[in-house]
Length: 359
Image (cartoon, rainbow, N blue to C red; front, side, top):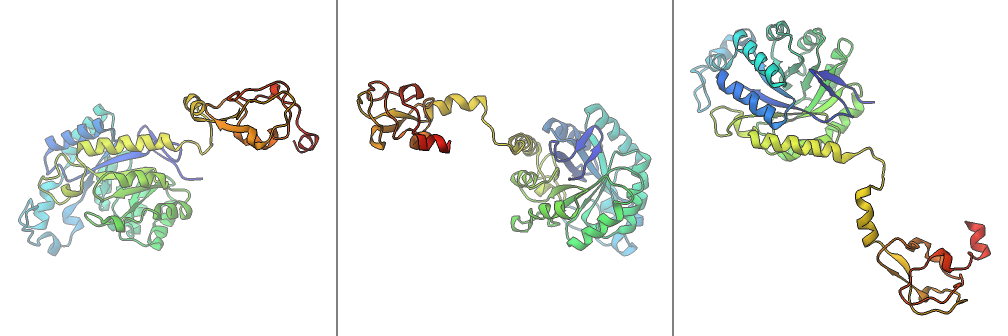
């Protein structure tokens, strides 16, 4: 039995629609106005959640990494630390965005990159925590975040199965509301490196977790394939415009793309059904029209013993079905029949005794 979890008002598991996270990250470019617009567009597209990223930059990076020059077309600062600080939202912005999310009726949470950021998010009573692929081996951080008692979702890019198992074994005793996302940490990820069948492997090895997919691929087809393989959470990067400045925009979905992806996931959830083959009312008239019945091939006198040459298959259906042909051959006509008459039980003698014994 696969695991389940609840984030906000949404239950997540095998019997629910796919839970879609619009990963905004820092695609807001440090603008609260753009972040609000991204929240609104994600809601309009049908996403269940929006997500940001939270870092305590000075505590997270070494001094050398923080002060390293960062001069490129996507930079928002002269050093990497300045770049990260420019994009970082603080308490005021998070509180305003929480109000925005509540008004819209969409879940809002963030990735915690360090313990200080986890404390920040916990103080805001975020409904869930995300852990990035780079921290799948950070067991102290995983255990710390699990201790808040909220659902924890971990991406697994750049990890082996043993790494994921360590994370699973560390989190599950503390917090059973655990999601594991198959992910390839390429930006963007090549299609031949997505390894979607790992989703099935995760479902086998980690049966108490909710399995999902975090896609850095271009396009909207792979999340549907992931859902069919058992992913019940899909996370995709989201932007207002793929041409905007920033490293993540190029492989992010724009509003139209997100809307189509959500639509296709909802259709797939409905289309998979319950695994039981059945006949629907909508099929009955077309199948009657296209189906075939046993029909008299030529005029036949009463008392004629039917052979295969006396019977043809013709549409529509509704008469004796073709699979009964062998049971009809050898029976006598009870009255004269004409070409194109539909055979019926009332026209024929009883089945031969050998046939009756078998039926």
